[in-house]
Image (cartoon, rainbow, N blue to C red):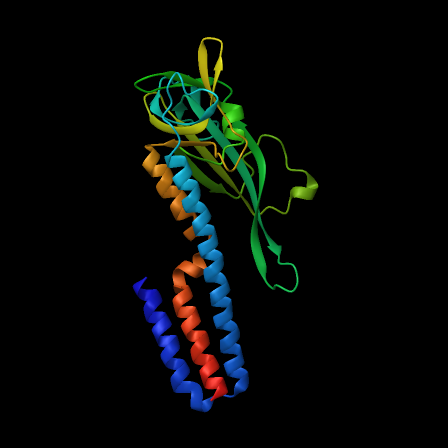
Length: 269
């Protein structure tokens, strides 16, 4: 933030210094830039507010217990399932995993934009089929991995990433897909005795309790290594990653509006 405010101060001072040497076109350009800053700041704050509201809702979710079925719950517990599996590429011993292979290439931006952008396409995804069990102080619940992770709002486990220029898949790539410049393997997994936090809907199936996917962004399905606090911290940081321009340049509403007022004052004068 210190760098952002230094940058903002330099820009503001530069406007005053350059005023006597610029024409109306430059002032108009500065006005457009400041209005863009205002728009970015409001956009950032709107999504930030949504993220905070979601976090507050998740914090109020009840802890999983035998009498809390048929509602959205938070489960912090230990993974009981034994390590009978291995991840397909990194060969990590685990109880559950998700494995993806992405094809990556450069695509020309659509007009009026110029240049190229990096595009990723999911070529393969494998999710372990085994049911796993989580246990806290009160209850043991099961999770069906394919259904739970396929529609999860977010999951973060032990992870492995590798890039390669050669095709890691067993089958050859079709002719129409040979545009890929390189490939990326992304694998995530959890092991027996790992501490996990899961958010989902608790349902009763006979004598068993199961945590199932909600299929709703308002009641997000989440599976994460660590505590619930780590989940909240991640969701809060997500918005800053989504709007790096706003975060880097410190495009706050206060600074943006002050710049607009300065420019309009100089214009009228």
